[in-house]
Length: 80
Image (cartoon, rainbow, N blue to C red; front, top):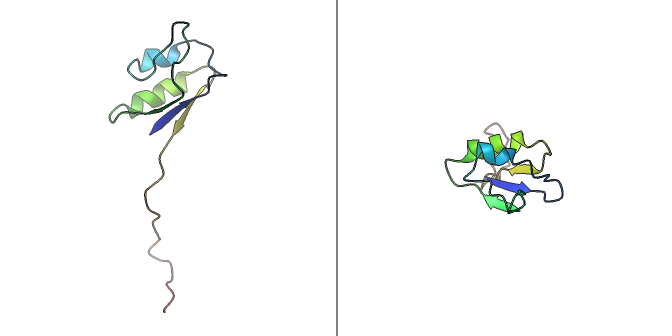
């Protein structure tokens, strides 16, 4: 999972940091100090909680797609 911060939307409320201080680092002016970050394993829930708490909606959660596409078992197969 990754988080993406939209710098133009961040208003410096710092609410995200209250829920996930190890993920959301703020700069000296109180704005998020990152643009794209891979969330460390085990901190996904905190990342989502912090993003959901953002009143400016400046944080997006990017979930990684599966590495391979699964084919449904009821899909007819063509004979070669």
